[in-house]
Structures are given as C-alpha cells and as structure tokens.
Image (tube, rainbow, N blue to C red; front, side, top):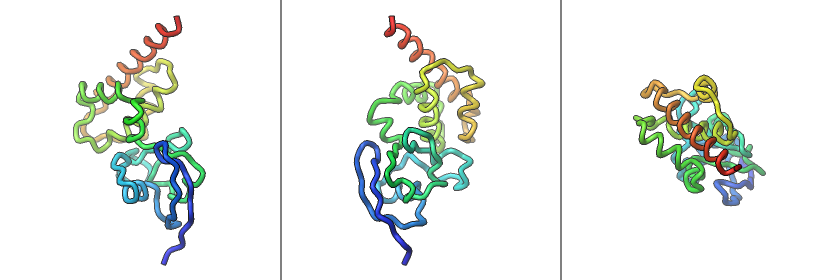
Length: 165
C-alpha cells in the first residue's frame, strides 16, 4: 500500500481537503478524483502543454507535478476560466476561426493564451507564438490560434483604452 498525505487546497474556487497517494500526479488526480476533463494527459514529459493548469496564478504542467504539491495552493483548470467568463471571448474566437480542430491541445492553448491576455498589453504575433511555444498542436498549423489570440488581445486592449478615458 502506498503512502498517502492529507492535503488542503483550493480547486477552481472551492476549498478541498483530501487524502492523496504520495506519488500520484496532479493531472491524474484532477481527472480521476474530480472528473475534470480539461487538463489532458499528452506526452507525460512536460513538453506538449496539454496538461497545463494554473497553480497560484502561474502556469504549471500537471504531468510534472505531484498532487501532494497542491497542498496550500490554489489550482485552476480551464473549467474555472470558463465558469468565470474569463475566456468567453477567446473561446468564441477559437470557434469562429476554427482554431480547435481535433481539440486535444485546445485546453492547454486556451489557458496559456489566457495567461498572455491577463498581461493586458499588446503583443506581436511573434510574441504570441513565443508564449505558446510550450504547447503543441498537430492539426491547425497555429495560424488560426494566433489569429484568435491576436484579435481578442486587440479588442481587450482597445476596450481598456476606452474604459480608461
């Protein structure tokens, strides 16, 4: 029987306290225990970005993090960003531009794009691509993804300028 540890953390806005096996990766924990489907298991080496989550507001690879490391942390998945409406415009633009095709990488792309967008300032297409460089997509060629992020970024920056006046 494997060792277990009691952890307490906030998951998508809700406080949780649970006993977890010491060697269980958080990606498996989130999918199995809480039935969250957005963080996906891809390469299991931290390279593809399909398992991307937020830990205390910063991007993290779920396949490289143990569930016990969530103790005392705030964990957010794409489900939370969707529920709060943080990325509604981005999701709509992804659909409009067909930036999601098979959909396997989409969760990681969206949460990574949200990280860039929360900076609230314009970025070049090259900077967008650089920010996404840890997320692989085998279907889209990235053009529609970058187009979508760029369009949302421009709209948000413009809205911010109008609101500041």
